[in-house]
Image (cartoon, rainbow, N blue to C red; front, side, top):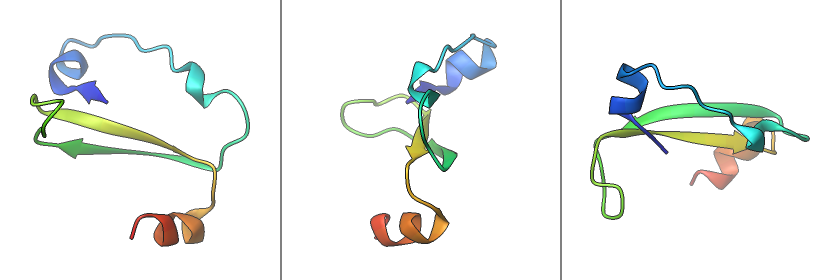
Length: 58
């Protein structure tokens, strides 16, 4: 999860988790929730294709 403040401050991110086999990456906004109360973005590294994403995301 990446806080909106870090994106606004143009913070650099080294995302080593992208190394290796994956299909695609999704990044989406979240207003905040228990555990990460500040507005932030979720970064999801998918190891399945879009059809598999639809099945997993239910």
